[in-house]
Image (cartoon, rainbow, N blue to C red; front, top):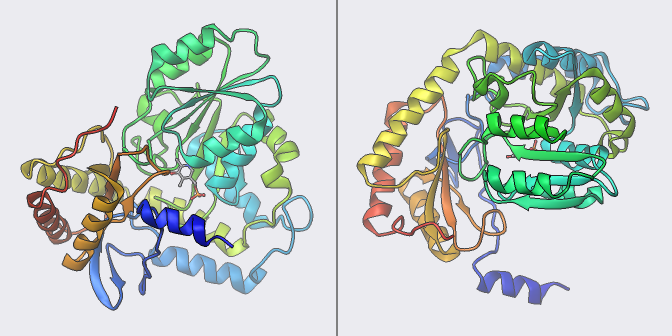
Length: 391
Ligand SMILES: *Cc1c(COP(=O)(O)O)cnc(C)c1O
């Protein structure tokens, strides 16, 4: 039925294939029986393979079985779901938290719950696909402002003063470029124009801020972001997502958010693993220190090769290649040499900016990073990273 569509994707070098992993998600993984350095995971702190999570999940499974058989509001709300929400609230220093099955379902549920017909959503041009889809589902008018451009955002706020509710939504750390949202300016604009501010901390949770509480902690603005979203599947090494905010925000979402209401709840074992992940995060601060040390190490290595990492300010490095087929070649060459970094192509990123999106982990050794730098050096020699960023 879709032969023609697939042919077109093939011609555009946009066909997706999935690499098959035969090991746990460590800093080195097994691909096709061969060990390679993993350089495109979001398991930033290496918690996914931590024994504490496995033990917590097994214990929970013994007690609760596996599936919950219903949504939270029917018969799928266990003690562990609520314990996880209390754990998240204590970690974030907020009064309440609500857990979602994934970051994707959090964004596609929360944005339509907050903004509806007649309202206005202001969204950064490089926001994650789940935010874009949330905007589409909301029936609110969506205005996309230029990436991190606060003058553009303010002009949109100024010309739309009458919208009953205005929601500004942004990635905290932009997932494909690794730069950080200008939160101090966003907070001021939200306050000046009476808008709700929502920050998606999928890549900031566990990574940014002294305690790893995310973008708001990084900027010292934790009391001034109305809705903070974080995910449990990236730096926390588990699965799921959460929203923190004032108690009325959480109660409102529990009552109205369709992706929360109409979906089977997370397995209790997943909740137990997530609670254990927060314990690991707090008990082992060396992981975040190592992550940032490794980030410097890789950044220096790339700089010495003359590879541009701008605008990265985090463990995410966008190594621009340009065309999709060249990015695919670069990724395949890297894999053959012993390094796994997937080629990121449209529509994940704008046309003409295909790249290797490289991420460093706390658990990478110096040797892992040296191997990655050596392989990226080969690609650089072959001219893969000489492409500029399209306007
Ligand atoms: C990964 C990601 C999500 C989706 O989170 P999942 O829990 O993986 O569904 C949402 N927003 C951003 C910015 C992300 O990078």
